[in-house]
Length: 117
Length: 111
Image (cartoon, rainbow over all chains, first blue to last red; front, side):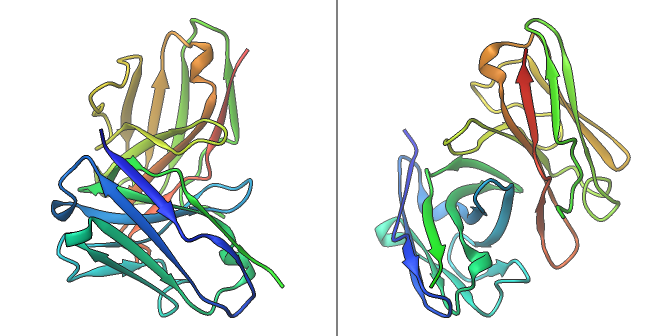
């Protein structure tokens, strides 16, 4: 059974940093692109970025490029999202998802990030 | 404002069919067949229902079908059931710097 479990969410002040993790199991993690998608409270889905199977390429939403960094550790079957210079508008539930071509096959349950003073 | 346009809500009675539209541009929906649909129940993670415009993942009911014409894609649910009540999102690859866009979501109510 495929499982994606996010962790690391919490309350952070504007300008602060937070690192999310996503633990994967039930599939060959190292052969999949992985994505982060967020959902602000009561709002729709927004793609944040993704990373190639071997970690050699990453792509980002314009509004987070330069502030967020996606990385992975295939030996630990783990995906990460380092978020710096956080803003109120980054407040959201952050999902990790496995990606096949241009679709997201499996999703975690999400980690809530709240940016507030 | 979302990159892809969906109706905010649709409704139907059990057993009926409904269609949800998703309108984009030639840079996304109209230019590529990387169009997928996701179902999200309240408090739950999204679930892939349709990919590459009209393909169903294993385990998804054949009551769900997808199509595309020009810059507009559609999700049709036939034989509506109470369990289909959820939010539905379309998503597409885009040739813009954003790379991947979602629609604003459509709330399906089963009357």
